[in-house]
Image 1: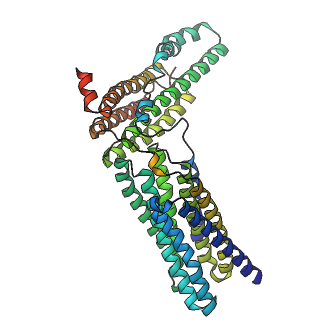
Image 2: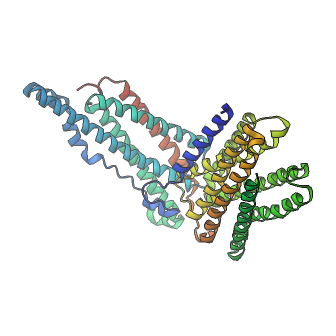
Image 3: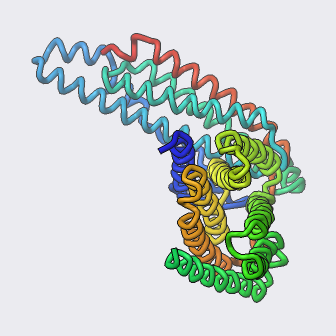
Length: 185
Length: 263
């Protein structure tokens, strides 16, 4: 078999794989038009659990526990901490995806988009996904402290708050100038 | 050899019948108004058959006039299919003015890159040059369709099932034809007969998918997209990007810190 045949075969197989993946619907309903703006949810599900997670991953608590209990129990607690951290990280990622979806919807419904901004967002979201997997792998190997996760959580929720404000403004703008005046008055 | 020729004849008849069915559905549903290029593509493929049949009958299947008529008419058909793919992309994304402006540029770049790649990879001797061009155009159509679907998915644009089926039909046909072309280039004369059969089988499958899609296709005027004011995007996009950058920086710190790894 020639190299040419193999190369083109691999390229076409790649195209077919991408075609299959791209034509499957993403989970969750996809709507078009202004209903999409109404359906944007920027509620960060991880925020209400922040204090419990802080407690679960508290370093002092863990040090106290390991000093008091036997090795087997300490190992169990260590594994439990890791499991909690991974679940929490997955929750953060879910919230991040939701925010990205909101950004994509706004871009798709805009009459003009900046190629530079779109490319930047695409690049940054790919970078996020790669780094997220690396952090996940790191946590899977060692149970984490709370500090790093808390920083991430704060960042995701502040992003949500900013976007929520922007979506509110967009909603008013989408209703037209009359709505904007009546909201201001 | 006689069996192969008979199989090709049967498949040719099936393809012709299916082309007529698709053509009739499009006329009955007046889809030539909404999809003039897709309609023209079907019409051109319909016209190709009697022309080829006439040339084969006069000069013989293996003659040079038959060879050139076959490839030139195929070139015209592929160009019309290209135009049909562009029309399909515009029908789906055209209403989203902002991202369409970006999409057509991206699709042009990817289409050109795919065409160039295939032209470079293909054989360049006199006999196979036309087949290399065919490979390039088909590979380019397949790439554009895949990139288009990825684009629509990324921006969460809902693609109506029947329009998606038309896109998938074009893409699958181009993918299989590219593969078929490359096998033909490698094995040349020994594969020519099988090439025709495989091409006809994939074409018949494409027409079945295309026919069922146009049969269930609803008029496009039903969905109108209401766009947001431009200021919404100019406020929103830089803010999201800035935050994403901060988020990535924080992830990098988390990766570097010893704190994550310690208990």
